[in-house]
Every structure is written in structure tokens, then in C-alpha cells.
Amino acid sequence: MIYISYLPIKSHYLGWGLHLLLIINYFLIMEINPDLQLSSELQELYLENKEWRSQIDFLKDEYRFFTKLFAADKLAAMKHAPEKVEMMGNSLDLLHQKIKDLESLTSEHQHLIESILTEPKQHIGFELIEQNASIGTKIKFLFESDRAIKKDLFELVEGIKL
Image (tube, rainbow, N blue to C red):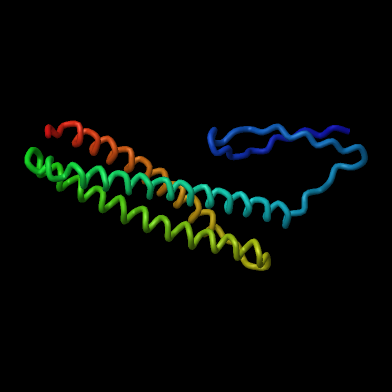
């Protein structure tokens, strides 16, 4: 007997997609053990959290680049647009703080998921799912902020006449 089911998976590059899974079973259709299913779902959360951690590392690298670019052109820009320079400095400081906060939050979340995976007797509530969704939203917002700061910084740098 051939049994076909569709399972959602998350691809690093493509986002949510559908993956066709063929399960060939000649004798019996196996029953899913709820503990194993829960474990695989927690592993997905763990992997998603690890992906967020790599995205935060990327944002930290971008922040370092932005601050070096900003520092190099700050003196020249002060003559032409001091209010824009001050606003950009404030935006970069805020971005840095949000990156640090999110890095701490994802680290705590990862440790929580690891502890649940290693000690399966723990109670798992909706708080874990809500926290996971909240982190996903914050990551998305942080990338939007990063894009806006990048755009403004590049416009500021392009406008400087040395």
C-alpha cells in the first residue's frame, strides 16, 4: 500500500513550502507517537531559532559596517547636514540596542527549547508558541528597520561632497 501525505516545511531560501512525502508501507500504516511528533515540532522550533540567531549575526555585521561608514563620513556630513547626522546616529544606536535585546531573547528561547528537548517531562504551554511568534515578528521588524537605516545612510553618504 502506498500512503501519500503533505507536510509543511520551512526552507531557508524559499519560506514556507509544501513538500511531498511518500511513505511506502506494505504491511500496516504506522501510528504516529504523539511524543515523537511533539519532539519533531520542538526540533523545528529549535532549528528556526538557530536560523534567527544566524540572521542576528548578519544584522550585527551590517551594524558594524554601518557604523564604520557613518564614522568615516561623519565629519564631512557635519558641515552639510548636522541634523541628519544626529538622527542617523540615534537610529544606529537604537538598531544596536534592538539587536542586543533580540540576541539575548533568542538565546534564552534556545535554552528553553533545549531544556524541553532534553527533559521531555516538562509542561509545554501556549507561552512557548506565543514567544516563538513574538520573536519571529521582532526579527521581521528588525530587518525592516535595518533596510530603512541602510537606505537613509546611503542617501546621507551619497549627498556628501568632499
